[in-house]
Image (tube, rainbow, N blue to C red; front, side, top):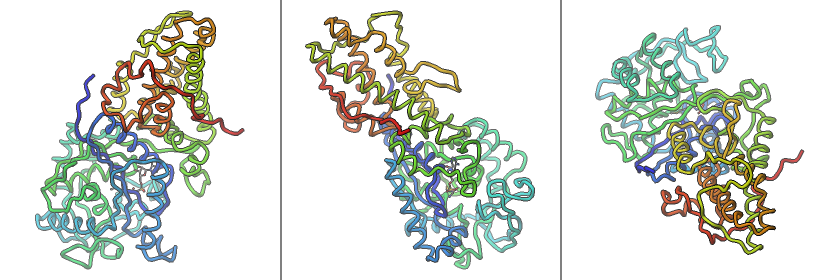
Length: 526
Ligand code: MSP
Protein backbone atom coordinates (compact mmCIF):
# COMPACT_ATOMS: atom_id res chain seq x y z
CA UNK A 1 0.00 0.00 0.00
CA UNK A 2 1.42 3.37 -0.91
CA UNK A 3 1.93 5.73 1.96
CA UNK A 4 3.59 8.82 0.53
CA UNK A 5 4.69 11.16 3.25
CA UNK A 6 4.42 14.90 2.94
CA UNK A 7 3.40 17.93 4.89
CA UNK A 8 -0.12 18.90 5.83
CA UNK A 9 -1.16 22.34 6.98
CA UNK A 10 -4.80 22.73 8.00
CA UNK A 11 -6.68 25.72 9.38
CA UNK A 12 -10.09 26.53 10.80
CA UNK A 13 -11.44 30.06 10.63
CA UNK A 14 -10.47 32.08 13.66
CA UNK A 15 -13.69 32.55 15.57
CA UNK A 16 -15.13 35.88 16.65
CA UNK A 17 -15.04 36.30 20.37
CA UNK A 18 -18.39 38.06 20.46
CA UNK A 19 -19.97 34.73 21.36
CA UNK A 20 -18.90 31.66 23.31
CA UNK A 21 -18.01 28.53 21.34
CA UNK A 22 -21.11 26.87 19.90
CA UNK A 23 -21.82 23.73 17.98
CA UNK A 24 -21.07 25.37 14.61
CA UNK A 25 -17.56 26.30 15.68
CA UNK A 26 -17.21 22.87 17.24
CA UNK A 27 -18.16 21.15 14.01
CA UNK A 28 -15.45 22.89 11.99
CA UNK A 29 -12.85 22.41 14.69
CA UNK A 30 -13.54 18.71 15.25
CA UNK A 31 -13.46 18.14 11.48
CA UNK A 32 -10.08 19.86 11.26
CA UNK A 33 -8.88 17.76 14.17
CA UNK A 34 -9.97 14.55 12.46
CA UNK A 35 -8.00 15.51 9.36
CA UNK A 36 -4.96 16.59 11.35
CA UNK A 37 -4.93 13.35 13.34
CA UNK A 38 -5.36 11.30 10.18
CA UNK A 39 -2.48 13.03 8.45
CA UNK A 40 -0.21 12.59 11.45
CA UNK A 41 -1.19 8.94 11.46
CA UNK A 42 -0.12 8.36 7.87
CA UNK A 43 3.15 10.12 8.58
CA UNK A 44 2.60 13.60 7.17
CA UNK A 45 4.36 16.43 8.94
CA UNK A 46 1.26 18.19 10.15
CA UNK A 47 0.41 21.64 11.45
CA UNK A 48 -3.09 22.43 12.67
CA UNK A 49 -3.98 26.03 13.39
CA UNK A 50 -7.03 27.49 15.07
CA UNK A 51 -7.65 30.59 17.16
CA UNK A 52 -9.72 33.68 17.79
CA UNK A 53 -10.57 36.84 15.87
CA UNK A 54 -10.59 39.63 18.41
CA UNK A 55 -10.82 43.05 16.77
CA UNK A 56 -13.62 45.16 15.31
CA UNK A 57 -16.79 47.02 16.17
CA UNK A 58 -18.82 43.98 17.12
CA UNK A 59 -16.38 43.04 19.82
CA UNK A 60 -15.89 46.60 21.00
CA UNK A 61 -19.65 46.79 21.54
CA UNK A 62 -19.86 43.48 23.37
CA UNK A 63 -17.08 44.53 25.72
CA UNK A 64 -18.95 47.72 26.47
CA UNK A 65 -22.13 45.80 27.22
CA UNK A 66 -20.18 43.59 29.60
CA UNK A 67 -18.65 46.63 31.26
CA UNK A 68 -15.13 45.46 30.49
CA UNK A 69 -12.21 46.86 28.58
CA UNK A 70 -11.99 45.25 25.13
CA UNK A 71 -8.77 43.47 26.08
CA UNK A 72 -10.23 42.02 29.31
CA UNK A 73 -13.31 40.97 27.41
CA UNK A 74 -11.46 39.18 24.60
CA UNK A 75 -9.12 37.49 27.08
CA UNK A 76 -12.16 35.99 28.79
CA UNK A 77 -13.84 34.65 25.67
CA UNK A 78 -10.63 33.43 24.05
CA UNK A 79 -10.03 31.39 27.21
CA UNK A 80 -13.49 29.82 26.74
CA UNK A 81 -12.51 28.71 23.26
CA UNK A 82 -9.23 27.21 24.42
CA UNK A 83 -11.05 25.37 27.18
CA UNK A 84 -13.73 24.09 24.82
CA UNK A 85 -11.08 22.68 22.48
CA UNK A 86 -9.19 21.06 25.34
CA UNK A 87 -12.42 19.46 26.50
CA UNK A 88 -13.00 18.01 23.05
CA UNK A 89 -9.48 16.66 22.79
CA UNK A 90 -8.55 18.95 19.89
CA UNK A 91 -4.93 18.50 18.92
CA UNK A 92 -4.12 21.90 17.41
CA UNK A 93 -0.47 22.84 17.19
CA UNK A 94 -1.13 26.50 17.77
CA UNK A 95 -3.94 28.67 19.06
CA UNK A 96 -3.53 32.13 17.55
CA UNK A 97 -5.14 35.30 18.84
CA UNK A 98 -5.25 38.45 16.74
CA UNK A 99 -4.48 40.60 19.77
CA UNK A 100 -1.03 39.02 20.15
CA UNK A 101 1.70 41.63 19.72
CA UNK A 102 3.56 39.52 17.13
CA UNK A 103 0.45 39.12 15.02
CA UNK A 104 -0.28 42.83 15.13
CA UNK A 105 3.28 43.77 14.18
CA UNK A 106 3.22 41.32 11.27
CA UNK A 107 -0.10 42.73 10.03
CA UNK A 108 1.40 46.21 10.05
CA UNK A 109 4.46 45.01 8.13
CA UNK A 110 2.30 43.24 5.57
CA UNK A 111 0.04 46.24 5.00
CA UNK A 112 3.03 48.55 4.72
CA UNK A 113 4.45 46.24 2.07
CA UNK A 114 1.17 46.33 0.13
CA UNK A 115 0.94 50.12 0.54
CA UNK A 116 4.50 50.68 -0.67
CA UNK A 117 3.70 48.52 -3.65
CA UNK A 118 0.70 50.69 -4.51
CA UNK A 119 -1.89 47.96 -3.83
CA UNK A 120 -3.31 50.00 -0.97
CA UNK A 121 -4.19 53.64 -1.74
CA UNK A 122 -6.09 56.52 -0.11
CA UNK A 123 -9.71 56.68 -1.20
CA UNK A 124 -13.23 56.94 -0.01
CA UNK A 125 -15.71 54.20 0.64
CA UNK A 126 -19.38 54.80 0.09
CA UNK A 127 -21.81 51.98 0.41
CA UNK A 128 -23.56 49.52 2.66
CA UNK A 129 -21.90 47.80 5.57
CA UNK A 130 -23.22 44.93 7.68
CA UNK A 131 -21.78 45.01 11.18
CA UNK A 132 -22.83 41.43 11.77
CA UNK A 133 -20.59 40.16 8.96
CA UNK A 134 -18.17 43.08 9.18
CA UNK A 135 -18.53 43.08 5.41
CA UNK A 136 -19.44 45.53 2.66
CA UNK A 137 -22.64 44.58 0.87
CA UNK A 138 -24.14 45.06 -2.58
CA UNK A 139 -27.88 45.61 -2.95
CA UNK A 140 -27.95 42.22 -4.63
CA UNK A 141 -26.72 40.49 -1.48
CA UNK A 142 -29.75 41.66 0.52
CA UNK A 143 -33.18 40.17 0.99
CA UNK A 144 -35.87 42.79 1.66
CA UNK A 145 -33.08 45.25 2.23
CA UNK A 146 -31.61 43.09 5.01
CA UNK A 147 -28.49 40.96 5.37
CA UNK A 148 -29.72 37.37 4.94
CA UNK A 149 -27.35 36.06 7.60
CA UNK A 150 -28.02 38.68 10.26
CA UNK A 151 -31.55 39.83 9.40
CA UNK A 152 -30.51 43.43 9.97
CA UNK A 153 -30.38 46.41 7.65
CA UNK A 154 -26.83 47.29 6.72
CA UNK A 155 -25.85 50.88 7.41
CA UNK A 156 -24.81 53.45 4.85
CA UNK A 157 -21.17 54.30 5.20
CA UNK A 158 -19.29 57.17 3.69
CA UNK A 159 -15.77 57.39 4.94
CA UNK A 160 -12.28 58.40 3.93
CA UNK A 161 -10.19 55.31 4.11
CA UNK A 162 -7.52 53.30 2.40
CA UNK A 163 -8.62 50.96 -0.34
CA UNK A 164 -7.15 47.64 -1.49
CA UNK A 165 -6.85 47.13 -5.25
CA UNK A 166 -8.85 43.93 -5.29
CA UNK A 167 -9.97 44.51 -8.89
CA UNK A 168 -6.38 44.17 -10.07
CA UNK A 169 -6.40 40.45 -9.21
CA UNK A 170 -9.72 39.46 -10.82
CA UNK A 171 -8.28 37.82 -13.92
CA UNK A 172 -5.46 35.94 -12.27
CA UNK A 173 -7.66 34.63 -9.47
CA UNK A 174 -10.47 33.52 -11.73
CA UNK A 175 -7.98 31.53 -13.76
CA UNK A 176 -6.54 29.85 -10.69
CA UNK A 177 -9.99 29.00 -9.39
CA UNK A 178 -11.20 27.62 -12.71
CA UNK A 179 -8.12 25.44 -13.09
CA UNK A 180 -8.29 24.19 -9.46
CA UNK A 181 -4.80 25.53 -8.82
CA UNK A 182 -6.73 27.27 -6.04
CA UNK A 183 -9.32 24.62 -5.42
CA UNK A 184 -12.73 25.31 -3.95
CA UNK A 185 -14.69 22.26 -2.80
CA UNK A 186 -17.33 20.94 -3.14
CA UNK A 187 -17.94 21.68 -6.85
CA UNK A 188 -21.17 23.63 -6.29
CA UNK A 189 -19.28 26.06 -4.13
CA UNK A 190 -16.64 26.51 -6.77
CA UNK A 191 -19.34 27.25 -9.34
CA UNK A 192 -20.93 29.80 -7.04
CA UNK A 193 -17.63 31.60 -6.70
CA UNK A 194 -16.97 31.53 -10.43
CA UNK A 195 -20.36 33.00 -11.18
CA UNK A 196 -19.70 35.74 -8.64
CA UNK A 197 -16.42 36.57 -10.38
CA UNK A 198 -18.10 36.59 -13.78
CA UNK A 199 -21.32 38.39 -12.92
CA UNK A 200 -20.27 40.84 -10.29
CA UNK A 201 -16.52 40.84 -10.40
CA UNK A 202 -14.01 42.10 -7.90
CA UNK A 203 -14.18 45.72 -6.86
CA UNK A 204 -11.65 47.55 -4.74
CA UNK A 205 -12.45 47.25 -1.07
CA UNK A 206 -12.00 49.52 1.95
CA UNK A 207 -9.11 48.21 4.03
CA UNK A 208 -9.22 50.61 6.93
CA UNK A 209 -11.70 52.34 9.21
CA UNK A 210 -11.58 55.77 10.75
CA UNK A 211 -14.09 55.29 13.51
CA UNK A 212 -13.15 51.89 14.76
CA UNK A 213 -10.78 52.20 17.66
CA UNK A 214 -10.43 48.51 18.54
CA UNK A 215 -8.17 47.46 15.71
CA UNK A 216 -4.61 47.51 14.46
CA UNK A 217 -3.49 51.05 13.51
CA UNK A 218 -2.15 51.49 9.99
CA UNK A 219 1.58 52.04 10.26
CA UNK A 220 1.60 55.04 7.90
CA UNK A 221 -1.59 56.68 9.19
CA UNK A 222 -2.31 55.97 12.82
CA UNK A 223 -5.70 57.69 12.64
CA UNK A 224 -7.05 54.62 10.87
CA UNK A 225 -7.33 50.99 11.93
CA UNK A 226 -7.03 47.90 9.75
CA UNK A 227 -10.21 46.39 8.32
CA UNK A 228 -10.94 43.44 10.61
CA UNK A 229 -10.98 40.84 7.81
CA UNK A 230 -7.56 41.93 6.53
CA UNK A 231 -6.26 41.58 10.07
CA UNK A 232 -7.99 38.21 10.51
CA UNK A 233 -6.84 36.58 7.26
CA UNK A 234 -3.22 37.15 8.10
CA UNK A 235 -3.58 34.83 11.12
CA UNK A 236 -3.10 31.93 8.71
CA UNK A 237 0.42 33.27 8.20
CA UNK A 238 1.23 34.72 11.59
CA UNK A 239 0.11 31.44 13.17
CA UNK A 240 3.26 30.06 11.53
CA UNK A 241 5.37 32.88 13.02
CA UNK A 242 5.48 34.82 9.76
CA UNK A 243 6.63 38.35 10.37
CA UNK A 244 4.85 40.06 7.52
CA UNK A 245 7.84 40.84 5.39
CA UNK A 246 6.41 40.06 1.98
CA UNK A 247 7.81 37.29 -0.14
CA UNK A 248 9.42 34.95 2.38
CA UNK A 249 6.98 32.21 3.32
CA UNK A 250 7.06 29.97 6.40
CA UNK A 251 7.91 26.27 6.36
CA UNK A 252 4.36 24.93 6.29
CA UNK A 253 3.08 27.41 3.72
CA UNK A 254 0.69 27.10 1.82
CA UNK A 255 -2.29 25.59 3.65
CA UNK A 256 -3.31 22.23 2.25
CA UNK A 257 -6.89 22.60 3.45
CA UNK A 258 -8.74 25.57 4.88
CA UNK A 259 -12.03 24.49 6.41
CA UNK A 260 -15.02 26.76 6.88
CA UNK A 261 -18.70 27.00 6.11
CA UNK A 262 -20.38 28.94 3.35
CA UNK A 263 -21.01 32.10 5.37
CA UNK A 264 -17.42 33.14 4.90
CA UNK A 265 -16.58 31.54 1.58
CA UNK A 266 -16.87 34.64 -0.57
CA UNK A 267 -14.32 36.68 1.37
CA UNK A 268 -12.01 33.66 1.50
CA UNK A 269 -12.28 33.24 -2.26
CA UNK A 270 -11.70 36.91 -3.13
CA UNK A 271 -9.98 39.23 -0.65
CA UNK A 272 -7.86 36.54 0.99
CA UNK A 273 -6.17 35.10 -2.11
CA UNK A 274 -5.80 38.61 -3.59
CA UNK A 275 -3.89 39.64 -0.47
CA UNK A 276 -1.60 36.67 -0.96
CA UNK A 277 -0.94 37.57 -4.58
CA UNK A 278 -0.18 41.11 -3.50
CA UNK A 279 2.23 39.77 -0.88
CA UNK A 280 3.85 37.47 -3.41
CA UNK A 281 2.85 34.30 -1.56
CA UNK A 282 1.42 31.03 -2.79
CA UNK A 283 -2.34 30.48 -2.54
CA UNK A 284 -3.86 27.77 -0.33
CA UNK A 285 -4.29 24.49 -2.16
CA UNK A 286 -7.90 24.01 -1.18
CA UNK A 287 -10.78 25.71 0.56
CA UNK A 288 -13.21 23.08 1.76
CA UNK A 289 -16.68 24.36 2.54
CA UNK A 290 -18.78 22.22 4.83
CA UNK A 291 -22.49 22.56 5.43
CA UNK A 292 -24.44 24.49 7.97
CA UNK A 293 -26.07 22.81 10.95
CA UNK A 294 -29.76 23.23 11.49
CA UNK A 295 -31.56 22.01 14.60
CA UNK A 296 -34.75 20.11 13.86
CA UNK A 297 -35.00 21.97 10.57
CA UNK A 298 -34.42 25.43 11.93
CA UNK A 299 -31.47 27.71 12.13
CA UNK A 300 -29.92 27.55 15.55
CA UNK A 301 -30.53 30.74 17.45
CA UNK A 302 -30.76 31.98 20.98
CA UNK A 303 -34.18 33.49 20.36
CA UNK A 304 -35.59 30.16 19.15
CA UNK A 305 -34.09 28.50 22.20
CA UNK A 306 -32.81 25.57 20.15
CA UNK A 307 -29.10 26.06 20.63
CA UNK A 308 -27.29 22.80 21.33
CA UNK A 309 -24.20 23.60 23.34
CA UNK A 310 -21.10 21.44 22.79
CA UNK A 311 -20.66 20.99 26.54
CA UNK A 312 -24.18 19.54 26.82
CA UNK A 313 -23.33 16.96 24.17
CA UNK A 314 -20.16 16.03 26.00
CA UNK A 315 -22.03 15.74 29.28
CA UNK A 316 -24.55 13.37 27.77
CA UNK A 317 -22.47 11.25 25.40
CA UNK A 318 -18.82 11.77 26.37
CA UNK A 319 -16.07 13.37 24.33
CA UNK A 320 -15.46 10.71 21.70
CA UNK A 321 -19.11 10.01 21.06
CA UNK A 322 -19.74 13.73 20.63
CA UNK A 323 -16.96 13.92 18.06
CA UNK A 324 -18.33 10.89 16.24
CA UNK A 325 -21.93 12.08 16.32
CA UNK A 326 -21.02 15.47 14.91
CA UNK A 327 -18.90 14.04 12.13
CA UNK A 328 -21.35 11.40 11.06
CA UNK A 329 -24.47 13.51 11.45
CA UNK A 330 -24.57 14.79 7.93
CA UNK A 331 -22.86 14.48 4.59
CA UNK A 332 -19.76 16.63 4.97
CA UNK A 333 -20.21 19.52 2.56
CA UNK A 334 -24.01 19.72 2.69
CA UNK A 335 -26.30 21.28 5.26
CA UNK A 336 -27.53 18.95 7.92
CA UNK A 337 -30.26 18.70 10.42
CA UNK A 338 -29.46 17.58 13.95
CA UNK A 339 -31.39 17.24 17.18
CA UNK A 340 -31.31 15.41 20.49
CA UNK A 341 -33.53 12.59 19.35
CA UNK A 342 -31.36 12.01 16.31
CA UNK A 343 -28.20 11.98 18.43
CA UNK A 344 -29.73 9.59 20.99
CA UNK A 345 -30.70 7.11 18.31
CA UNK A 346 -27.38 7.28 16.58
CA UNK A 347 -25.46 6.92 19.82
CA UNK A 348 -27.44 3.84 20.76
CA UNK A 349 -27.34 2.18 17.36
CA UNK A 350 -23.78 2.94 16.26
CA UNK A 351 -21.88 3.14 19.49
CA UNK A 352 -23.62 1.38 22.39
CA UNK A 353 -25.10 -1.48 20.34
CA UNK A 354 -22.56 -1.28 17.56
CA UNK A 355 -18.93 -0.65 18.30
CA UNK A 356 -19.10 -0.94 22.10
CA UNK A 357 -21.03 -4.18 22.03
CA UNK A 358 -18.76 -5.77 19.44
CA UNK A 359 -15.65 -5.08 21.49
CA UNK A 360 -17.27 -6.37 24.67
CA UNK A 361 -18.54 -9.50 22.96
CA UNK A 362 -15.31 -10.29 21.17
CA UNK A 363 -13.09 -9.88 24.22
CA UNK A 364 -15.46 -11.87 26.44
CA UNK A 365 -15.47 -14.72 23.92
CA UNK A 366 -11.71 -14.62 23.78
CA UNK A 367 -11.51 -15.04 27.55
CA UNK A 368 -13.81 -18.07 27.35
CA UNK A 369 -11.73 -19.57 24.60
CA UNK A 370 -8.53 -19.04 26.54
CA UNK A 371 -10.05 -20.71 29.61
CA UNK A 372 -10.87 -23.69 27.41
CA UNK A 373 -7.19 -23.91 26.49
CA UNK A 374 -7.46 -22.68 22.91
CA UNK A 375 -5.39 -19.88 21.35
CA UNK A 376 -5.70 -17.56 18.39
CA UNK A 377 -4.71 -18.70 14.96
CA UNK A 378 -3.80 -16.18 12.27
CA UNK A 379 -5.60 -17.04 9.09
CA UNK A 380 -6.96 -14.29 6.90
CA UNK A 381 -9.87 -16.36 5.85
CA UNK A 382 -13.16 -16.56 7.63
CA UNK A 383 -14.03 -20.22 7.82
CA UNK A 384 -17.42 -20.87 6.35
CA UNK A 385 -18.86 -22.35 9.43
CA UNK A 386 -22.56 -21.98 8.90
CA UNK A 387 -24.03 -20.38 5.86
CA UNK A 388 -22.46 -18.37 3.14
CA UNK A 389 -20.12 -15.79 4.53
CA UNK A 390 -18.16 -14.00 1.90
CA UNK A 391 -16.32 -11.24 3.64
CA UNK A 392 -16.45 -8.03 1.63
CA UNK A 393 -14.06 -6.47 4.05
CA UNK A 394 -10.71 -7.33 2.61
CA UNK A 395 -8.39 -5.34 4.85
CA UNK A 396 -6.26 -3.77 2.13
CA UNK A 397 -9.33 -2.68 0.18
CA UNK A 398 -10.99 -1.32 3.28
CA UNK A 399 -7.92 0.77 4.07
CA UNK A 400 -7.74 1.98 0.48
CA UNK A 401 -11.34 3.14 0.46
CA UNK A 402 -10.98 4.65 3.91
CA UNK A 403 -7.91 6.58 2.80
CA UNK A 404 -9.64 7.68 -0.37
CA UNK A 405 -12.57 9.05 1.61
CA UNK A 406 -10.26 10.86 4.00
CA UNK A 407 -8.36 12.30 1.06
CA UNK A 408 -11.62 13.55 -0.41
CA UNK A 409 -12.52 15.02 3.01
CA UNK A 410 -15.66 12.89 2.98
CA UNK A 411 -15.55 12.82 6.75
CA UNK A 412 -18.96 11.29 7.24
CA UNK A 413 -18.17 8.52 4.77
CA UNK A 414 -14.85 7.36 6.09
CA UNK A 415 -16.17 5.72 9.27
CA UNK A 416 -19.36 4.69 7.56
CA UNK A 417 -18.39 1.27 6.36
CA UNK A 418 -16.93 0.58 9.77
CA UNK A 419 -19.67 1.72 12.01
CA UNK A 420 -22.95 2.99 10.77
CA UNK A 421 -23.42 1.48 7.35
CA UNK A 422 -25.92 4.01 6.10
CA UNK A 423 -25.54 6.03 2.94
CA UNK A 424 -28.36 8.46 2.21
CA UNK A 425 -30.76 6.22 4.09
CA UNK A 426 -29.67 3.20 2.10
CA UNK A 427 -28.26 0.48 4.28
CA UNK A 428 -24.91 -0.93 3.37
CA UNK A 429 -23.23 -3.48 5.52
CA UNK A 430 -20.74 -2.04 7.98
CA UNK A 431 -17.74 -3.95 9.20
CA UNK A 432 -19.20 -3.99 12.70
CA UNK A 433 -22.58 -5.31 11.55
CA UNK A 434 -20.79 -7.94 9.56
CA UNK A 435 -18.71 -9.11 12.52
CA UNK A 436 -21.74 -9.10 14.81
CA UNK A 437 -23.62 -11.18 12.36
CA UNK A 438 -20.68 -13.49 11.93
CA UNK A 439 -20.42 -14.07 15.66
CA UNK A 440 -24.16 -14.68 15.96
CA UNK A 441 -24.09 -17.24 13.20
CA UNK A 442 -20.90 -19.08 14.06
CA UNK A 443 -21.76 -19.13 17.78
CA UNK A 444 -18.19 -19.35 19.05
CA UNK A 445 -19.49 -20.14 22.58
CA UNK A 446 -20.76 -23.46 21.20
CA UNK A 447 -17.58 -24.04 19.25
CA UNK A 448 -15.63 -23.46 22.44
CA UNK A 449 -17.77 -25.98 24.34
CA UNK A 450 -17.10 -28.52 21.62
CA UNK A 451 -13.41 -27.67 21.49
CA UNK A 452 -13.88 -27.02 17.79
CA UNK A 453 -10.59 -25.78 16.30
CA UNK A 454 -12.35 -23.44 13.94
CA UNK A 455 -12.92 -21.13 16.94
CA UNK A 456 -9.26 -20.15 16.83
CA UNK A 457 -9.55 -18.77 13.31
CA UNK A 458 -13.01 -17.30 13.78
CA UNK A 459 -11.88 -15.40 16.85
CA UNK A 460 -8.62 -14.30 15.27
CA UNK A 461 -10.59 -12.79 12.43
CA UNK A 462 -13.00 -11.01 14.69
CA UNK A 463 -10.28 -9.60 16.93
CA UNK A 464 -7.85 -8.68 14.17
CA UNK A 465 -10.59 -6.87 12.29
CA UNK A 466 -11.54 -5.08 15.49
CA UNK A 467 -7.92 -3.91 15.73
CA UNK A 468 -8.19 -2.37 12.25
CA UNK A 469 -11.46 -0.71 13.20
CA UNK A 470 -9.72 0.82 16.22
CA UNK A 471 -6.98 2.30 14.02
CA UNK A 472 -9.46 3.68 11.53
CA UNK A 473 -11.67 5.33 14.10
CA UNK A 474 -8.67 6.93 15.83
CA UNK A 475 -8.98 10.34 14.10
CA UNK A 476 -12.64 10.49 15.11
CA UNK A 477 -12.49 8.87 18.54
CA UNK A 478 -8.88 8.91 19.71
CA UNK A 479 -9.48 7.76 23.28
CA UNK A 480 -11.80 4.95 22.26
CA UNK A 481 -9.26 3.74 19.73
CA UNK A 482 -6.63 3.49 22.45
CA UNK A 483 -9.01 1.78 24.86
CA UNK A 484 -9.84 -0.87 22.27
CA UNK A 485 -6.18 -1.39 21.44
CA UNK A 486 -5.41 -1.75 25.11
CA UNK A 487 -8.06 -4.46 25.46
CA UNK A 488 -6.48 -6.17 22.49
CA UNK A 489 -3.06 -6.02 24.14
CA UNK A 490 -1.69 -3.52 21.60
CA UNK A 491 0.22 -0.29 22.04
CA UNK A 492 -1.58 3.06 21.83
CA UNK A 493 -1.91 4.65 18.42
CA UNK A 494 0.60 7.40 19.04
CA UNK A 495 3.14 4.84 20.19
CA UNK A 496 2.93 2.78 17.01
CA UNK A 497 6.30 3.06 15.32
CA UNK A 498 5.53 1.55 11.95
CA UNK A 499 2.04 2.56 11.02
CA UNK A 500 2.33 1.16 7.53
CA UNK A 501 2.93 -2.23 9.05
CA UNK A 502 0.09 -1.72 11.50
CA UNK A 503 -2.29 -1.24 8.59
CA UNK A 504 -1.48 -4.67 7.23
CA UNK A 505 -3.19 -7.91 8.11
CA UNK A 506 -1.72 -9.82 11.00
CA UNK A 507 -0.73 -7.08 13.44
CA UNK A 508 -2.47 -8.99 16.21
CA UNK A 509 -0.07 -11.58 17.56
CA UNK A 510 -1.39 -15.06 18.22
CA UNK A 511 -0.25 -14.73 21.81
CA UNK A 512 -1.63 -11.21 22.33
CA UNK A 513 -2.67 -10.40 25.88
CA UNK A 514 -6.36 -9.73 25.33
CA UNK A 515 -8.61 -8.74 28.20
CA UNK A 516 -12.16 -7.58 28.49
CA UNK A 517 -12.22 -3.96 29.66
CA UNK A 518 -14.61 -1.24 30.73
CA UNK A 519 -17.83 -0.61 28.82
CA UNK A 520 -16.95 1.81 26.04
CA UNK A 521 -20.35 3.40 25.49
CA UNK A 522 -22.75 3.02 28.41
CA UNK A 523 -26.43 2.92 27.55
CA UNK A 524 -28.33 6.18 27.86
CA UNK A 525 -30.70 6.55 30.78
CA UNK A 526 -34.23 6.51 29.53
N1 MSP B 1 -14.00 35.63 12.45
C1 MSP B 1 -14.57 35.18 11.23
C2 MSP B 1 -13.63 34.28 10.48
C3 MSP B 1 -12.30 34.86 10.15
S1 MSP B 1 -11.25 33.72 9.37
C4 MSP B 1 -9.98 34.62 8.80
C5 MSP B 1 -15.87 34.43 11.52
N2 MSP B 1 -16.00 33.91 12.75
S2 MSP B 1 -17.29 33.13 13.30
O1 MSP B 1 -17.06 32.97 14.71
O2 MSP B 1 -18.48 33.73 12.90
O3 MSP B 1 -17.18 31.67 12.72
C6 MSP B 1 -17.66 31.33 11.46
C7 MSP B 1 -17.41 29.84 11.24
O4 MSP B 1 -17.98 29.06 12.30
C8 MSP B 1 -18.08 29.27 9.99
O5 MSP B 1 -17.39 29.47 8.80
C9 MSP B 1 -18.11 27.79 10.37
O6 MSP B 1 -16.83 27.26 10.22
C10 MSP B 1 -18.51 27.83 11.81
N3 MSP B 1 -19.98 27.84 11.96
C11 MSP B 1 -20.71 28.78 12.63
N4 MSP B 1 -22.02 28.40 12.65
C12 MSP B 1 -22.20 27.25 11.98
C13 MSP B 1 -23.29 26.34 11.81
N5 MSP B 1 -24.51 26.58 12.25
N6 MSP B 1 -23.03 25.17 11.18
C14 MSP B 1 -21.76 24.83 10.77
N7 MSP B 1 -20.74 25.65 10.95
C15 MSP B 1 -20.91 26.95 11.37
O7 MSP B 1 -16.69 34.31 10.64
